[in-house]
Structures are given as structure tokens and as C-alpha cells.
Length: 94
Image 1 (cartoon, helix red, strand yellow):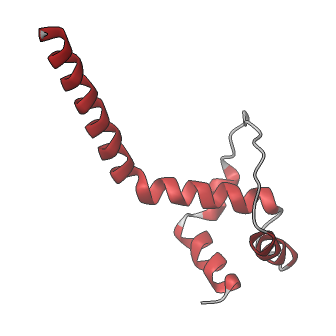
Image 2 (cartoon, rainbow, N blue to C red; image 1 turned 90 degrees about the vertical axis):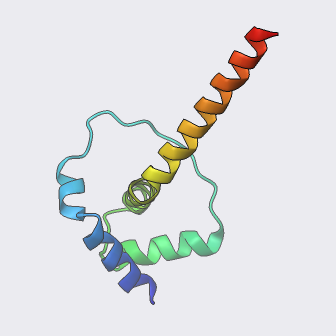
């Protein structure tokens, strides 16, 4: 699948128009180090008119990642919390 068709599919799957309309007014800036090849792909998408800028591509990618992996991330965090609680319980009995 080409970069452009992948970007189009990603945009449609994540309801890009809704994401753009409801941008949060409070945002935190972060700095990323990305491989040159990945940066070139981001720039290609922006130049092709698929996205306003590289930041928009990254925001959409992170949003999509979190949506796709939310159930497994929640389960992982819950398991870690349960394990911690069990360790605390065992330690308090000793």
C-alpha cells in the first residue's frame, strides 16, 4: 500500500474532519526524533495536501494508535495494578 493510500485510509478511519474540528484548545508541545526516511514520508503527505503540517500527521497517528490499543493498554495497566496490590498485601502480612 502506498504512503498516500495509507494516509487516506487512516484519515477516513479516524474521522479526520471531526478530529480537526474539535482540536483541544490546550496542547502540550513535545519534541520527537524521527528517522530521516519517516520525516520524508511525513513531508510527502503534507506536500501532497493530505495534511496541513507534520504535527497534524503525528497527532492523528498517536490518536489512532491510542484508539486501536486502548483495550490492551487498559488491561495491561489493570494487571500491573493488581500485581502491585497483591505484592503490597503479601508484604503487609510478613
